[in-house]
Amino acid sequence: MDKKSLIGLGLIAAILGVWLYFSGPSKEQIARNKQIRDSIETVQKEYAAIEAAKMAALPPVVADTLKQTVNLSESDKSIALNDKYKDFAISAVGKSETFVIENENVKATISNKGGQIEKVELKKYHRPDETGSLVLFNKDSTNFSLKLNAYDRSRLFSTDSFYFKSVSQTASSIILKLETSKPGSYMEFAYSLKPNDYIVESEIRFVGMQDIISQTEDQLQLNWSMLFPSQEKYIEKEKKAATIYFKQTINSPDYINPVKDEEKELSEADIKWVCFKQQFFNSTIVANNSFNKAGSFIKSSSRPNSTTVVKSVKSELGIPYNHGADEKFSYKFYFGPNHYYTISDYGWELESIIPMGWSIFSYINKWMVIPLFNWLGFMNLGIVILILTMVVKIVLLPIAYKTYMSGAKMRVLKPETDALNAKFEKNADPMKKQQEQMALYRKAGVNPLSGCIPLLLQFPILIALFNFMPAAIELRQQGFLWADDLSTFDSIWNFGYVPFINWAYGDHVSLFALMMFVSTLAYTYMNSSMMPQQNNQMPGMKFMMYFMPVIFLAVMNDYAAGLSWYYFLANMFTFLQNWIIKKIVSDQKIRLKLEANMKKPAKVSNFQKRLEDMAKQRQQAVKKR
Image (cartoon, rainbow, N blue to C red; front, side, top):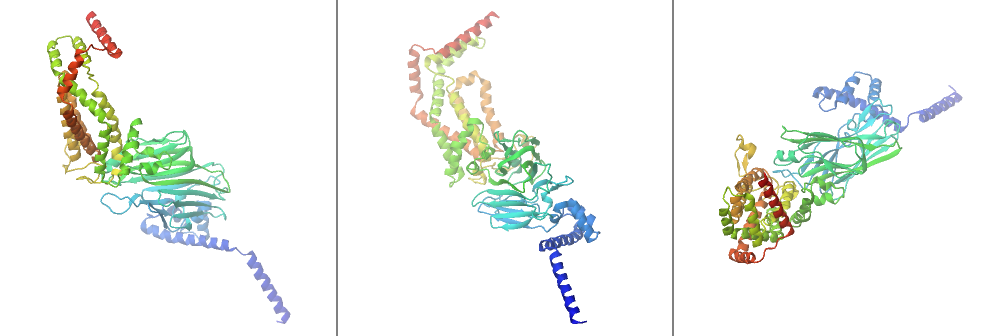
């Protein structure tokens, strides 16, 4: 071969090489093809593992795909995978990985399978008798996913079926990417934790997805479900408190009754937040703007026979999607305690999940009890409750004084009331007897109802504490004397199952409840001895006065020990107050004052006159019959 032929062949080879270089696949395409080949190889390997493990580690949809493709050629497998998952086929298989972001309060574990938070630990809390962080939920008890309709509406996908890739991560933030087969089209889930906070800032980003997601959809559905794991000493107490709260943009927060199984549509207005509330902690999703009301609902289901699962809860929320080339939906999670000051600072009305009591009663807890618990939180909570009782008793001292004086006046009038009872025997006219009694009280300057009104004024405090104490996270795992947790009942004797007794009283003896019961009986006896004439007139009322503490014992035996401790202290301080007042104001001085009043001309108020007129009219009507 001559020189010219060699040069010609060289030129042809060079031209061919240049042509192959420029006409061949790009680096991106080579990488993507390699990724597909790797995915197919992974399919083959995972199929063998599935057969050995009976497909326990993969969801059914992936297992079904692997069964259909395992015996096909490599090209046919690729076609089958693409047909099954379309543009998401590239992310349909992969290796499970987890990533951790954390701050001083929260440790969140995020899975690349679905790009979801699969586990949350609260570092400053722990389960009873355990030292590790409290697990709010784990991968076996939660699911978070976004439903995606394919462009041709032939498939409905869920993000929990796909594997995301970490594209950016720090100690407190991460961005996970869901790739598609179309270059420049992907989704991202972003999570970040602020320092010393319980908030996980979150965002879903859609980039170039307008030709992948169906054009007929103007919103996507976000699914979040959870099985509440037991976190406290007594799961039955948790089951009575666990439920779902929600806040719509135009309404006050509302909830599903904890004792009901219910599915509720949230179609009245767009939704600001949905809260999965447990006894002392909650997991809440909050939209920066709002979730769409269309198709949104919440569902709560009980697990009465489970000893580890408190309740099953689920929510489905609509998020807007406008088919833009680059758009996002921003929201956040709150993972933390039901602590009033912590959650009220966010300004979402999330503090409504804490039972404060009815209407105006709630302000007693907001303005007095909670501030006191937090100001004196460095002290033992049993001592703080003692201080709370002292504060309440000092505030109510004027009322207690009036209550005592009313009973004392009725007591020193016993000679007159006994004479009146002797005058009107059993067959006498009761209306006439009542009129003369009222005349006697009016002449002596005694109001028989003045002892009841102060007691009614104390009632709101009792009701407010009755609601708040069992839910107060300040009392959780706070021991005092023999009780190891003031937020639930103390037990000095567990006697087991006894027919009827368990239903009416329980299977244990609470010493704090027993102390409250005994002190209440003593208080009842003291009141009865102060007003014996009223007991003689209303024997049925006397029975009720002694029977109610028995009912209260049955209730408080299974209630928060901190509340029984408060009621016991309240009774003891009442004894002390009455003893001091009795030393200062003797019955003899009260008697002299009443005798002086009876010598004065009686003054009749308009109200008293109307009562007497009504009594006379009734008496006349009876005589006419």
